[in-house]
Picture 1 (cartoon, rainbow, N blue to C red):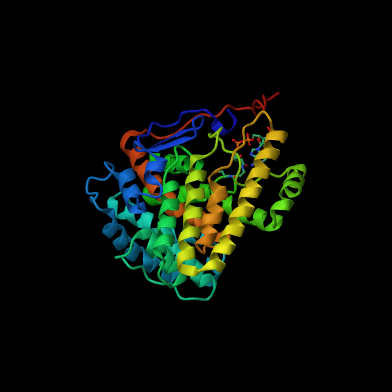
Picture 2: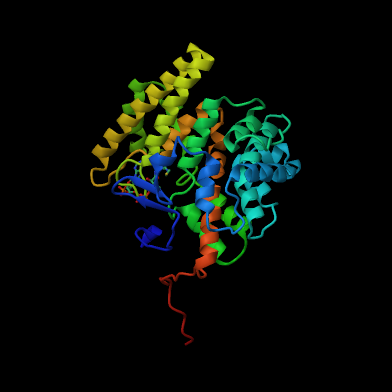
Amino acid sequence: MSGLEGVVAAQTVLSEVDGLAGRLIIRGHALDELAGRWSFEEAAGLLLAGFFPDLPDDLAPALGAARVRVFEQVAHLDANLARAPVEAIRALVARLADRDDLEIGLNLIAAPAVFTGAVLRVSTGKAPIAPDAKLGHAADSLRMMRGQAATRAQAAALDTYLVTVCDHGLNASTFAARVVASTQAGLTSAVLAGISALKGPLHGGAPGPVIDMLDAIGAPTNARVWLAEALDRGERLMGFGHRIYRVRDPRADALKAAVRDLALQEEAVCGRIALAEAVEGAALAEAVEGAALAILRERKPDRPLETNVEFYTALLLEALGFPPSAFTCVFAMGRTAGWVAHAREQVAGGRLIRPQSAYVGPPPRVAA
Ligand code: COA
């Protein structure tokens, strides 16, 4: 019972995680049909279909307009708040109206992209950049962060990431969002619960530590000794293991391919230096991945521990220029589409989520 492992707590049409086959299905599409092919707007539209009567066929203009609407909250950002990116976007999301309709749903899906760019700029003393509603969501997210247009390859890589993480069964943050939605508190409250759960290193907070680990290892030849010492200290290797997947996380492969595509396409634009760095980083990551899988198999022979989504997330987001402190915010950019869809599904069909606990404390004292 610990961790509710194996407990089915909701019925959903949104996604299925098959941990034995290593398969993720999002509304009838295998992940590899979507990742690298669909834009984030298309994937968000797929998730939201049927949950809002006024949902437009093409979500891109509506999401662009939502980015413009939520940008006004950026005025409430200061350098102090911006120092902790996840807390900052949570604080700004908390300022949004809390209703249960399409406008609020789109505001919430737009918000992490707008707020992440602004938080990163304000934290380094730069002015926030207003959204451009005409751009695609991924391209505009990168432009708002960097102050210059993203290349087509960079926008495509971010689209791949956002689509890859947009929904994933009843993970901890989605469950938290559904619990709050089941009380009819409103979509903003549900998304705030999702962000709070996502923040933890056992859920969405792992990719930052993956970069720390790769930096600390430094070169492929150091991998085995470094990893063995970390396990000897009782630490977990970030980017490995999963509650549901007993084989390789299919999202890891989608992101590994995106890292490789980005490196190759950026070569054409940036020249050999960028490629050399990217190839070196990818070689280190692949060496660390191989060493980690081997050592985990030796140390935990009874527990299949494979690469999870966070390992290649770290490489991809770093290549796109996001600092590790903002990786969880970028995860929220994609996953908010799933949280909003799950919240609507919960409200439409579900009852209040109210399980029971087994009391294991002392019996009441009986008066003598
Ligand atoms: N490194 C080393 N050991 C690991 C491990 C890891 N990444 N993940 C799990 N284990 C070990 C545990 O120590 C435990 O060993 P024990 O039985 O000897 O105590 C065993 O595997 C089972 O772990 P458990 O905590 O029951 O698994 P879980 O299903 O609750 O955990 C995660 C799932 C994701 C929380 C866990 O694998 C983890 O902490 N991974 C690292 C963080 C990470 O990458 N998070 C992103 C998830 S997408």
